[in-house]
Length: 326
Image (cartoon, rainbow, N blue to C red; front, side, top):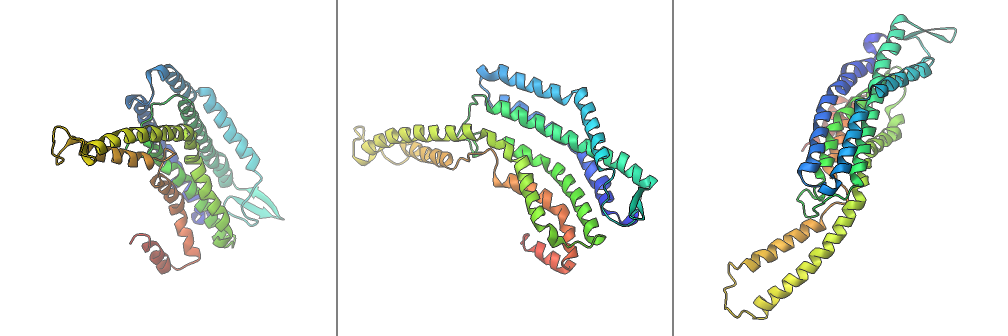
């Protein structure tokens, strides 16, 4: 396997690593907007502001920790040491030469391992650390007594912006998927392994992506469910009172002033109350919707699409893809 045919090297260095670096500014800007929106939207009551500020300060301190960066660099170095004797194939490649069943790394192979893979490992662990900080911050926020609005049009009591933020992690998912696709391409082209051999692992990978990037948001579920149940009871009681008065005045004929029914505000209030109850009834128990999951799944699947060329002609692949676009 010559260097120019190494799919894993191309996807790792030309796609994955640039995305992991560029994504930091985009995602951090979006996360900062979310942090501000919690307070700006009034979701955090005044009594909980000190706890919220403490969680925010804690997260920023971990993000800017020099010690954490050094430890992550050390973790990347340990990872390199652990995989230094692992080779993807039992034949010679540009990374190593096989003689008497013994692998000897080439100078290019050592550079690839220590510098290339080492930097990739550092970026990988750094993003794991960033995700931990983000989810830990959200967990501390979810413990606060948030001022949720179950009739909010986002269908998540005002927390829909949290799920939308997770869409911005598509670049991280795409980077890891591209790296995985490159490794699988090497296995298929040079190792003779069929793509069908990876059907179950790839399906499992999609599940892991959703669990990692949407699963942690389930921490808001208890508050959302409690808010929905309480509001359903409150709005139900309000509807009973309102509709009894409406029925008595306009249906049973108790209209002493003889007001005309056409254009009366009671008709509008009846419709508004019904619409509010419908919004409340459709409220989701999680702060994300199917569109958020679709974005992440597409980011995981698109880098894998070229692998289908190993099991079907290009014409059939284009026909298969076109069915989802029509």
